[in-house]
Image (tube, rainbow, N blue to C red; front, side, top):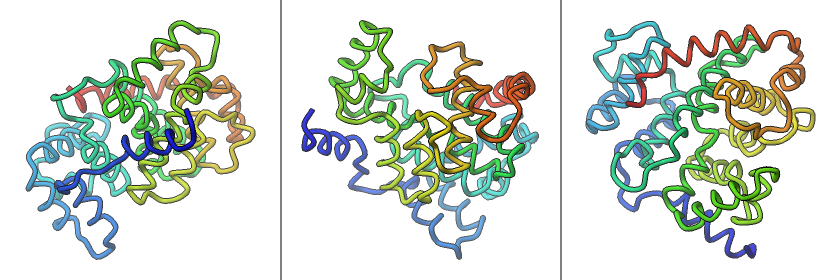
Length: 274
């Protein structure tokens, strides 16, 4: 692809709706430091689909309040603003919709496992777990957007990945799309005005941990590595989980404990996506 074609593709797949729905308005409201939980809750309640997703996540066993969160404003306080922003972003890009082209079969499973892994690792390296959770939840947003909004290119990409199992998928993405799914996700989150450190972390989550400059970025690399190990998927990161944890000054021997914790937390999140 030429640079112009790549830019056109990224613009196409990250384009927001002309008529902003509740999810997009919620993202704008989250930028307003004067908005209260009640204000956010009222906006969420105005959209039944968005309300369902927010309440569904707040009522997972992961937050220890299964079945007890009955109002949107209460869900806001349970989830925290970073996680709420991640859910609103997924909703704004229509990723929860049942209509249209289906997402890759394992998209949400891997996203939730990575979110759980990011949260577990965050507790060990003095990063806010909610910030880390939102990173994990959205780290493969680019894959979902290309799948939904550029299906011809996505199908060609998948066909080539299957035909060339020894070639890293990100190399094939760059050859076919002129960009990687991580870079597409970063562009989308830039449009959504996410904090720069989160955008940078997602853009670099397939880099080797030793060259990732930020703590948040190395955390996401490690979370993805742990999730791939749990999901038993082909390795798509540049370091095994132990090496990625070591880049966070955690002992490689911590892998077993982190994996066990993430398996338990991932099970608690299973009800988020039906």
